[in-house]
Length: 189
Image 1 (cartoon, rainbow, N blue to C red):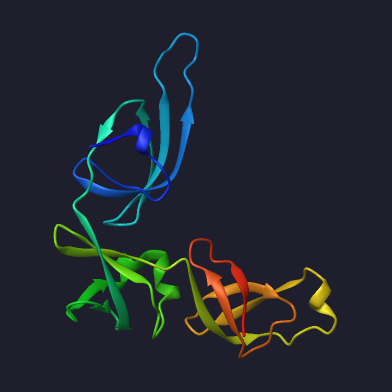
Image 2: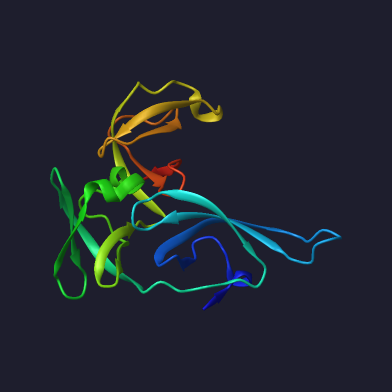
């Protein structure tokens, strides 16, 4: 059992028999009249991706979900499923593309660091690496002298994801993108 004092971003917990990932947590100190600490959480369901806010009282206990993370390789997606191969057993797993949520646009051939999350032995979602490297397929031409300014422009990547990049970046270059925020990090040389 986990105590509310253990809560932090990224922690997996079980509430009402379902697995959740804590996205954000804040603690409200007690007022003069009330001695209970309030721990406010924003949680994302690992089953359907819904995000809810839920307060807990200080000292409340929650369960640890029976989840397992397996290092996997992304193979391909069809109209209904994304297919992954387990890095140890070489067994293939499929997850409905609708269940991928915001992770879909970051998946590409050869991506490393992907983990398939299994709950009670069944695949329910994936966990992406902190960043991915993708090639720019379309952006407006670079602007001369833009290296010293903070101008940005939209760029379409190989997976269809659109990110804001510095004005000096050109089509065909490979960039590193943060999978948690969707923001450009740097150019890959």
